[in-house]
Length: 461
Image 1 (cartoon, rainbow, N blue to C red):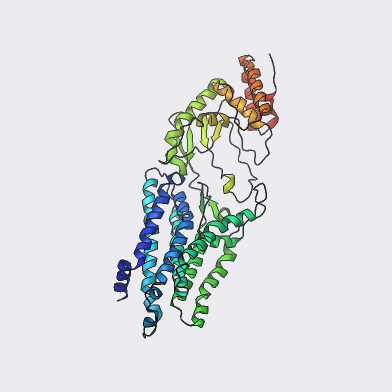
Image 2 (cartoon, rainbow, N blue to C red):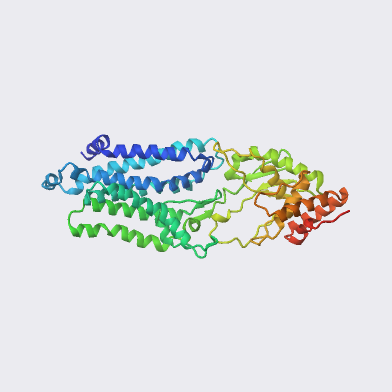
């Protein structure tokens, strides 16, 4: 009998419409932002979680609308006069809403997966776990919305809940993060662990994953919150209402002390498989991380071209190009204190931009100059730079044989300094040029900035 009622609710109630609207909205949002996750399963999971800032308020509002149904049709007193317990009447409706919003969420993920499968070189199982946490989050939002709609059957209840939900999951995390940073956007202390009770995620590096412990604790909290919503929906007496709050209180009391501090950054850990190298050995070796294996065919050509240009002009030139596997500064909880220096025969390049098709976006020609500049870079830890970027600009221009191209934000004095240093360098005999640049690179690889800055010292023949 309950199954039959559930099927009727799915066909005739607003639950199906809520699920369809969620499906359409989620699909549009994901497929207009494919460049953020294409070819990367973990990024798809994180992006699905970040879209909860839209789908959760929608589930709250939809639940409130559905919870007002009895009051809207003025049958509250009629149903209250029956001997059937209230929870037996609300469970099929609540189940229909849960099935609708959960199915919409899963279908959006599967549709977006069509853009990931063709170019993904690595499938972390934890991506499924991270994405799955969104299901109890939506169910909890829907049931809490139904309980609120039943308690306050007013027209404004649904839109107010939508606004409140967006503030809680979309704005509060950012406000808390801003409160823990100074005027220069430097984090002065990590965010509290309670911030992870909000199920939305953002800002995960491609080489990171969310610790399974965090996903389990979030699921525990969201399931307890959903239980509270269902109990509130079926509660009639004050004692039952007070009892309904207990699951959420207990779930929060268990989860908060065990969750890490630092928000998303504190919950993230490095995925050791994602940073494994995938190499092309048909020529000078070029390697990328497994998480970006689909980019390898695109970067091999420019990387070997850069290595050839270095071999033609630079003594003891590097013969290998490897993608950097360092976590981006915005993805780290704290500053990096342990540099990982690379060998002198290797250049380490940054991940190229990724286009909406999951391939490397090299359209504006920035990648080859960045590879040439990488010949003068070494991981020396979080040390402040002075004029090293000017020296690297001159060195890169010398390798390419083209005058330096200053950036728009440079000061006029810096532009003139770079141009003068380049002209002074190329006016030297070829042998002396090579000796000076070889010494500058050796100093750079040894983290001695004075040797690299010597490029800027004009030395006329």
